[in-house]
Picture 1 (cartoon, rainbow, N blue to C red):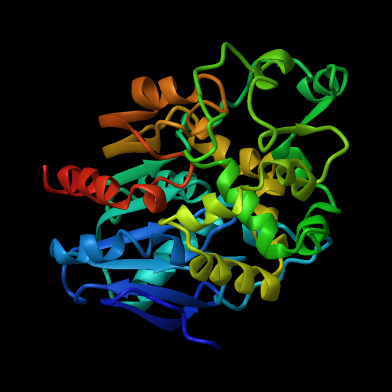
Picture 2 (picture 1 turned 90 degrees about the vertical axis):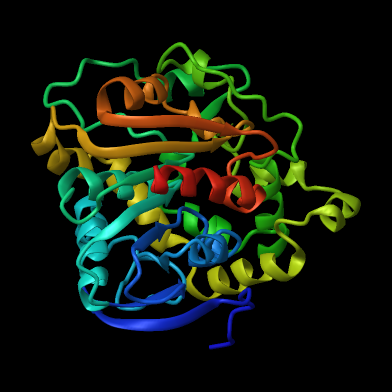
Amino acid sequence: MTPLPLPPGIRSRMVPGVNGLTMHVLEAGEAGRPCLLLLHGFPELAFSWRHVMPRLAEAGYHVVAPDQRGYGRTTGWTAEYDAPLAPFHMLNFVRDALALLEAMGIARTRAVIGHDFGSPVAAWCALVRPDIFSRVALMSSPFAGPPARNPAPQEDVHTAMAALTPPRKHYQWYYATRPAASDMNHAPQGLLAFLRAYYHHKSAEWPGNKPYPLKGWTATELAQMPDYYIMPLHATMPEAVDPFMPSPAEIAANTWLPDSDLAVYAAEYARTGFQGGLQSYRCNTGGANAAELTLFSGRRIEVPALFISGASDWGTYQFPGAFTRMQDTACADFRGAHLVPGAGHWVQQEQPAITASLLLDFLQS
């Protein structure tokens, strides 16, 4: 494949024999040094860590960032809508992480660090195998702990949101529908323009991102979030973000995601499609993950834990109460929550220097 435009110090390779996958991995720093495992989210790639990897490597770490199952240049997965979902269950992502370390000859990490969807994967790595993942840093998606065995009944927010004026829907349940991947694969404005609008809309560059805690899991509370989370009922995701396409001047001024970097995402998703990433949302919304993870109900993350998010990131509050539960109950040794000014959802890309500094302070404490 075309070589990725990587910053100096980052190298790319394929690692075979990883829980049925041949995993594409970016590395920085020397093997044998304390390892940091970096797990990306959606719709991202290992490439999303390009700005922080050299900084972490310069501090003396061996930094490993894979394309996770369903993404990028990692092979060995299939993601047809009617294919079995078991490979995309949360605990299988933990198996992927463990198998990758084993294939690379790494017995233990200094930390596992996850952003967006990678954040819950990192959390479950630390909760299930604290002997291997000795610290955890969660980014943009708080971990509220394992699901309860007998959860309290909740309002049917989906029916209630559809009855709002204007009617709305939750993006994760949209992502679980059959048309969602095709909607994005064939975005009418083109894949590059769709991704530009999507990343911009969720970043600190969009002035409407002024998040605050929500009072509960109700339609009226959730509807306070922007359209990329609580979408217009009849819109596709490309249609939902298209009105927020940045101007040519705003695109030219963007330093954290120039067109040359955005083209990497567009090329990779044009080749793989989006269904690989969406399978994980289906496991969440359909209850498959909860059915397995209730086994750990009452367990906490015992290793030191950190949270980093953008000050303009609604992801911190999108599940009401999760940010507080992470700090009070889900993590036994919580070392701090940092909301970074000048960053939205893509904190490690928008503010890499601050993100790397916070991580290094946590790792070296």
